[in-house]
Image (cartoon, rainbow over all chains, first blue to last red; front, side):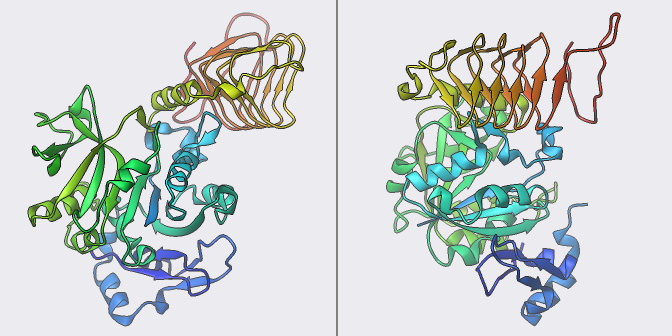
Length: 60
Length: 356
């Protein structure tokens, strides 16, 4: 499985790309960071991959 | 070298407690399971630690540990989201690890001894990884490693019906970044998860070498209430002699007893160690706290006998009863019935368990 992530540019915390594909934006998990991480911040090729393989990243 | 601790998963076998808290925050001897893990990494010299969080309970973890400063660690939170397997969880740490070798510690495992030797024996120039193992009595219940005469791992089998060895993985690994390339090639298993063991097997099949490190001392995978109680017992059994205080101000206290700030033990109460009492605990006269009990912060024990049990934060036990081998959840209340006549008044929710 290709594991894609996005790091917060403010604090370095990390969110899985499949979470961003599902929810489009997520509060940064960094404790003292109020940044929002967005699906659109991923590279285009990563976004396309996550959308095309969305089912792989779901536990049914 | 960096550290990675996995703190996701749903903890289904620890319900009902895990309905409201992550399993890694269950108290063992007065500290969450996860704190034991972070302590082990820090004590071995690893202070840059990535904590992989799942969908549920991550706020409790972040609230407790913060940036890690209070624990002399520098924590980076990595949000995995849905539990897609250990392989996916580890894969999420690639940018945090950033080309370094790293120690992976499964956050619901608790070990007796430190991991300094495990780390010092791992040479990333020579090995693709190392797995801490221990002989077990019933290998068919565990992930088992197969080794050659040099102690190198040549295979891994989950819960084998015909175990080749009795060496079980105890949830501590060391990896080079090579593991990430293999994770990318692993397809989800029949249960929909990306199995870390499949990624390791790919490296082994490609001729890479993994060390096995036989660890001493006890270890527990704290996945069931029985495991919680057993691990709690083991941790309290290791309370240092310094906790055997003079207890001049506490008449009825004997043995090794760790006592938190502002805790009150009334005259007429008995505490027999090894016991951990958290902060702001009240033990009223007529109560007995017996060996291998952990009473967390802000609990009140009023007249009860508590032995070999874990009482989680802010619980109250106010009844003339003997509580043994039990786990009482956060803010739970066990009280004397006010009803006349025989019978027990019970309010029991989903996954709760009561023995009468």
